[in-house]
Length: 300
Length: 326
Image (cartoon, rainbow over all chains, first blue to last red; front, top):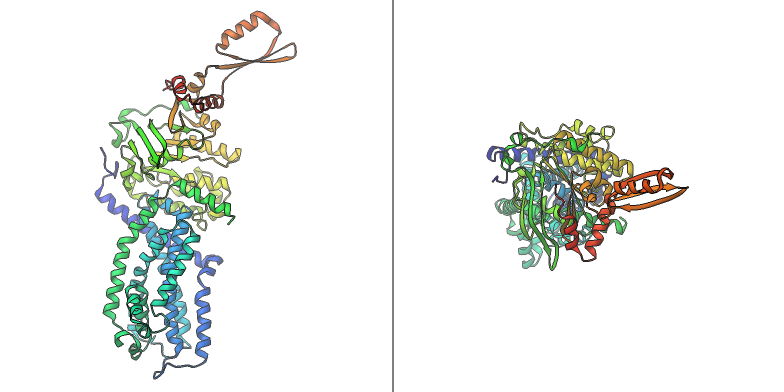
């Protein structure tokens, strides 16, 4: 009787196979990212949102409006909000929808038919998501660098904080994307629920308006999910220290930020592969074929 | 084209360690699958030997796809014993996965990737499972040449035609040099030329690689061309088993004799064609022309069999054909 590893000896092979899958996943992510630079439609998917945001920001900033009692323009707080919006959109919406779409078109089944393919697939998707976020963040900040007053981009601490907040925040977002992405049978039904869910999250997370002015129950609800903490972290990195006054507890609360985002990230890293495997387990050639029939008969 | 019958069975001493105690690559006993109150498979048993091309034939809804998905480890069976490469597919680990190949009915996944990119990337998952007997993965360019896509190696996948896309699917299925390859209705929607190229590819695979292949189809011509052995699945059980030749020999009306006499054409079924022709010449002698004796085609055998089964006489069908085992 042979075990699951078949004819190949188990221990060292399993380790090497895991490494190979991670490497293949990195390569997978890199190839998909490179499509953004080489293919117009991919660039078109990613670029409009940051570009539109920049235009909106320039309009706001042209009014030279300043936050009361500070030298920071309103534009700079909006910029922080736009940045967070980008991360959430990529981490939850794009990630979740991509998952649903790739379940539908057989990509996930392909991964499942490959040894350690699901691990590689997940690695690839994380690379693509974080790469896209990095691109948009750099785009936004490059533009933000010039016209906005009060952005604290000169400090090393700004970039350091931004780096860990974005990395943790992204990992914290993925399980939500993975749950949403594995729940639905078709991209259509996923689209509605994911959009609605994300809008509710936006509403309670104080991305553009200080959460401290909201009712208490909403403050608590917002603080249970990662978007609020991501927003807080990004503001703490980009805005001058005195703006902490408008936050809950009149502080940036970096430890709490790291704690909550870290907890979600760990939950994500544990849960996402399990959820993906479960989503993949329900996949078989016949169900992919059945969905293909459905989509083709709709004429998409 | 290499004669299929001429391929020697592997000697026991040369077989790979995992199966040294057991030559069968697939061993299915009393497999049952039930969805709700519907029995899709009720008591299917068969084996596949190393290097064999086993074709599962059957009408739509016979349970072919369900059976193959259970063997691939994509579906959990309701009851019965299943061993694939000596492992229960419900608990097959990644090492087991690396030894089997699955050709999926792909659609639009990885459309922006280039052919070579995808094959190289998927191949790299198999590298740790390489062994002296089977060097994994397949060299990318060699593989592309094998499936005839060399000219399209740098093309984006969504720009491939249906037939080219299908050949890419086969390439993806075999990139890890599988010991066992599953093909579920591989040529559905092919034009005759693409179908022929695909058949040549399957022959190349079994001749050069000694891979075992399990293929489902409802194309009888395809079954006849490719199969070492055919299983006919209807209503969730195997109603006949044997080579195309053996199956058609079991038909009650075995052969068809055609001739012409005085400018008139005649067709007559004959259980004993030699005797019939002797009698024909005894009676009409030199006036018999254009004599032709042909065995009943697999198609007729199959149709008769499925008709017999569907008319409720499943037992009769098994009596007539069930004994055919190579």
